Image (cartoon, rainbow, N blue to C red; front, side, top):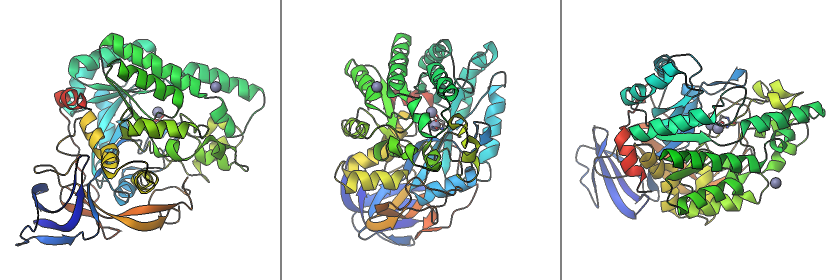
Length: 467
Ligand code: URP
Ligand code: ZN
Ligand code: ZN
Ligand code: ZN
């Protein structure tokens, strides 16, 4: 059935204009003034923005981590994402040791199957490569339409890969036209600092931040940049939190290196003092890299504004406070790392960014959707409003005021790091490929209707270079 969105203000990364949008067969087929409504279901968007659906390039749903598993799975996670204005996520498929990559991918497909309410793709995380996984990697990326490989320089006891594996990953990615995403922190030194703090008897959540200094993020970022450069490869730095890392990225980009950077809502809006709250409250704010002292925020905003950082990921990795965070009640190093942000990523960036005058609506669309689509090979199928693109659309009320609370959010956790925050702007209706997932703030989607999106490797090379 055709749909027509009437009377809204369409905003993309480049333009804003009043227009109607005609949708047929899941695609945008016409954009223009006073389009005929003949036989189409009308969606009234008067007074609203009509925006491309959010693309969240960084989620961890149903992921085993830190001796437990995240509380949001593909059902609650994608429903919450949709309420928040996100229509596509890219989730990290974990692999481990000797396990065949194909088996890991199958496992991840099974997690999503029948559950995802929105479209999705995978990044492939790799630990240390074995000869077998190294041989399998190119074929798996090609076959599965995966354009991005993730390597961790942190989590010494779980995911950390050697510099040698990281370098090999860059080489392989370069040959294929893929992109390596790196968690840049010096995991080995952090491990030592954590042991030192534990030996000294420190137990409180704030020691999570104190044992992961910004210098070790800056140092790892610089190392990743140089390894990528020597390999002739592109680099995407995930969850950049601090001036030290931003400075390295800017220096590299000024030298003409293909380096891209992502930051996340909490690093722009919350600071390290949250971890120092009494009564274990600080555990709600434990993720990695940690929150930093407040002055880092302006460096992140400025870098976003200057397009030195391009994307906003949620780094959704949720653990309930009364449940799983308690694993670290007597030992800060056992608090599962991660927070619930998949739902509020879009609203926080709009409210703190556009409504407060820090960024324009175009910059917002670019950061929340378009740049991720380009960098990860989804563009122009997704990430914009254009003829021929998927009708992934958010009808957004820029005036609405809303209070964030765990009582009303849709994530499967008992707290929200933004509890009580008043935000400006709210997604009213959300369409994925022309079908309502959220209609007038109600979930009307179908679990399992989200499609796995294969991405062409070569497209990444071409599109990403334009950023
Ligand atoms: O603390 C975090 N960020 N948890 C998720 C894993 C990661 O490092 O991205
Ligand atoms: Zn990470
Ligand atoms: Zn320092
Ligand atoms: Zn993450």
